[in-house]
Length: 252
Ligand code: BT5
Image (cartoon, rainbow, N blue to C red; front, top):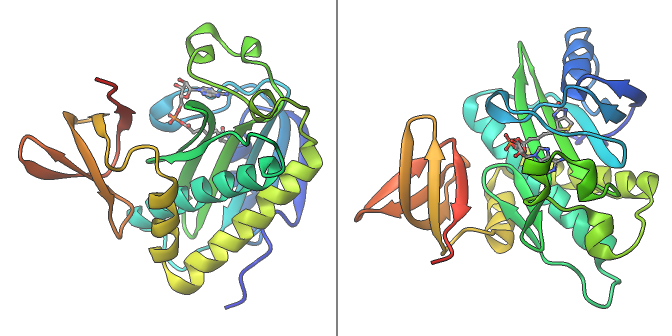
């Protein structure tokens, strides 16, 4: 199967509630794999578990329609990590020429951090019957002051860490090139190469973590990312497989 060039066609919108919502509508109308929606501003940007994603002007807010061979839970989990690796690689390319490139990390299950703060979030969503929507929010040129106060302290933007304005079109081009590359590898080789890159870029593996999920609350050491995209944590002398939740690195 020849992988699609993601980001074509590209539907550019000024203000929408959520690019995932618009993409779901297009997927329902049969839009082809690779079709993407990008907006300048989102008024109802979504995160996981009903959380909000702040999306003022100055970010890249986009959703790409994928049509993978299956849409089981592990497909979505591993595709969210495809998104994470692609964003991290794009950021690496966009900042590679700087004297002191910022440190980019993938944080399981769906974040990318730059110099220890949240730069981007990924929202993978099944869109029945046969599509997966890969939503990506990346703070490009916005200032943390543009974000609500509770988000500000934990977030950063690429422009801020790079110390210069980042061209939105060029950045989007690089992001779609990386997404196409890593999605193509996922289609052709499975999750293994993405898993390896995730481990290289991981913010958590080998470190003491706290995991809070819908039905678990544990402290332990993050050991590994598994073949289905789950996180393996050693806690209280046993290995726990974490399929959803929020992970924070414990500093003490
Ligand atoms: C995510 O959720 O990180 C997934 C975010 C996906 C957003 C994209 S934008 C395009 C597409 N269309 C959508 O409607 N969504 C997708 P989660 O792990 O649940 O993180 C949400 C949390 O991140 C919030 O509760 C805040 O604490 C924080 N947050 C919100 N806005 C942020 C921002 N702009 N930058 C950094 N952190 C933010």
